[in-house]
Amino acid sequence: MALRRILSLNKRLISTPSNSVAGFASFSSKSNPYIVKVGIPEFLNGVGKGVEQHAEKLEAEFGDFQKLLVARTIKLKRLGLKCQERKLILKYAHKYRLGLWRPRAEPVKS
Image 1: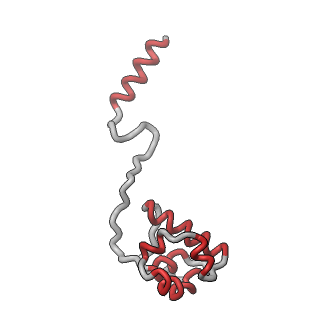
Image 2: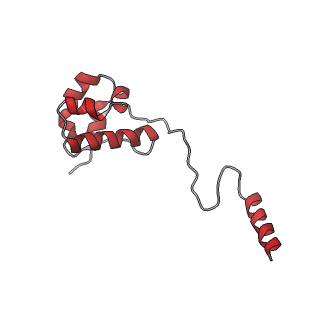
Image 3: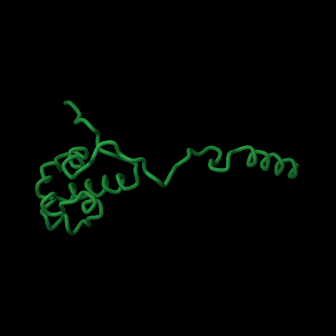
């Protein structure tokens, strides 16, 4: 009985492709290149919830979008952002770096 189970498990492992695991979606560590050029104002508009009002302040301080992606919370706090706004920016920056989120190309019509 145990030998039969081992053989059936071995057949399943051999029959699945080497780059995928049965029951799991395939994930890649490389993010897809983005068609739309993303800057600080586009990123903050994508996050929404009031953080877009700080676009000029963040643009003046960081200048480059890549510098905003690696910013720490203390630097954002010194710029006068509230705790909830800092958390939103840092959360979406992390998702953007991983390739799990990107701002929409067109703003959402309300």
